[in-house]
Length: 451
Image (cartoon, one colour):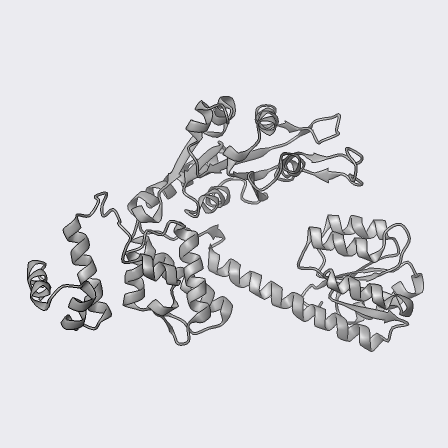
């Protein structure tokens, strides 16, 4: 087998189908073939394929519909169109919509082999990149949360203790603190770890779309519902469903979700019979959910159902010791992904990061490191590789240190030290920048012990 590359061949001409099946099997691929477009859609729903070779013109379901289905179910699948000379224009149109390439009928077998090998190379590259990401982001099959903060360590211990209990969990914290990562940590440390972990952002959909995504629909439930669709709640059975930004969920859906949690059953849109489900719910919010309950925007009974155990993840500004740790973690990750020899962060660049409040939290650190690796010329990320607005803000950001707001003198001392470092210790130039004379600067240096 060609590293278990799975190919689906769809052609309503039996002779052409058998020829392609024979050639691809001879090349060592795992081959599935069908003369039916509808059957091809069914196969795509049942299992993923690496490559799909499909005839463009077929009755009932054509190649464009198969291409669309592939894009929906498995974006990594490469689709190769097979077409007659009279429809080359349609094939080019298909490529613009995501097809990898096209093969004209009557095709030459050598051409088929070449195009499939090119598609296979792209598939393998995608797999390697995905495996690299998984290798970097995982730790012995478990979600890896990078921290050395004592409060975070206690949170992780709590998360690990409640993971096997199967109770619902509510996670709060600012955007970018890692709420979904905590949810995954709980899932992979639970008895459900072999089951699916599915996530949805409740604020990213309209009410109608969110209902469809969560509960699914029956065929013919509404205009355009040409097939049955399972909802995420049904698909997450025996696993975990993560509901991000839960306070953005419309009231009508809150009522239906409450019933799912209470009765452990779901009713698809347009359905008449309920389906039993076994799902653990983990919800998250970056807002004050109790305030939402008081104002009537969020149901109190649903809040109590979800808030069996609550975890609050502190922002990075309250756990600054994690900043260097996270910075080097993401540096290593993106250096590997971009295949660059960037391995260090200069002391000055790290100082800027440590003196910045990082309102975007872990997500912002990741973005900063990804950008730094991308534009770094050597093996070290310098201040110049940090975002310009961050460099400007770094000297103006007022921060709490150990829960205490710094005094004016502490800010002045920090600013003088920063200016001196920027000018290489040149006191004359520093005095000019500070708009004071050298004697005044000398007095301040003596006052702060910076002579």
